[in-house]
Amino acid sequence: MKLRRGPDGYHFFDRMSGMNFLLDEAIPAPETWSQSPRQISIALTNQCDLSCPHCYAPKTKAKLDSSQIKLWMTELDQHGCFGVGFGGGEPTLHPDLLEICDYGHLNTNLAITMTTHGHHLTDNLLSNLSGKVNFVRVSMDGVGKTYEAIRNRPFDRLLSILNKLGGYMPYGINFVVNQQTIPDIAEAALIAEDLGASDLLLLPEEAVGKGRQINPTSKARLQDWVAGYSGKLQLSVGARNANDFPTTIPLQQEPPELAFAHIDADGVLKRTSFDNAGYKIDQKGVIAAFSSLCYQQAGAIV
Ligand code: SF4
Image 1 (spheres, rainbow, N blue to C red):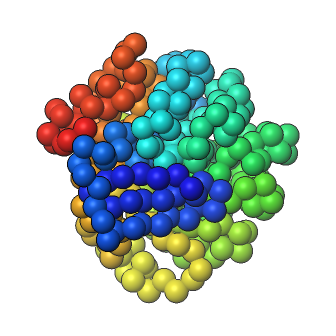
Image 2: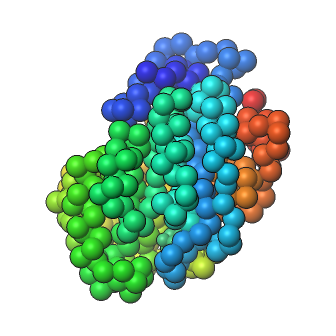
């Protein structure tokens, strides 16, 4: 198991099972705390072949170099990061996706995850990623015609991809919630459960990129649905909306700047993908950029 020291104690994590274990009877000295974000997302590329109306990603040609990503993964792993989540744009369009995941699996103890629209998950790609990617998140905003109006891809095709995905690796569903998709939430959860997804990440739409803020009525409907949900999926919600839902915070003392960071497709390290400002990662490496970000934003000890 991988160990991370922090203000909540000694935190152990196993990337294969996803198990977390916190020993909180002793708090390590601050100077020994892990020097990396606990989780990081990396936008491998800004390119995407869909054009969803709520898309948050800048549609530029930016794409990260695989040798750079490997160096950052090594550094993050050595400084106590638990996992890296590849996204974009659409990460399956990065030409070196397999090589990058392979490297992370063989040379680091990072959990490798990926967020994708799913339409390039062929049997060949899935069998090559199997055993190297620990978890996949697939976007499914709405069902049937709602999904097709947003994603411009056949819903049945998505279902057949999800149907086989669970045979290769564990997965969850990302659901952007807005006025158009909220009526489908219950059916989407049933489908996800039937097809073997383990969790449902609820993402109330944000006013970022092409996105528009979810309206209060739709948000209230979502809150009601969450309150009444009794299915098997683990529900989670985007961090910016956590205060509006009955969420659990296992690491009570961990400052947000130590929990998560994002690297965009131009190699700029930010607090989240929604932030404009950040630090370009230079030859000093990703941990040096992370340290600058933490000092600037919170005065945290890093
Ligand atoms: S939301 Fe995702 S799948 Fe849709 S256009 Fe944007 S990057 Fe592509």
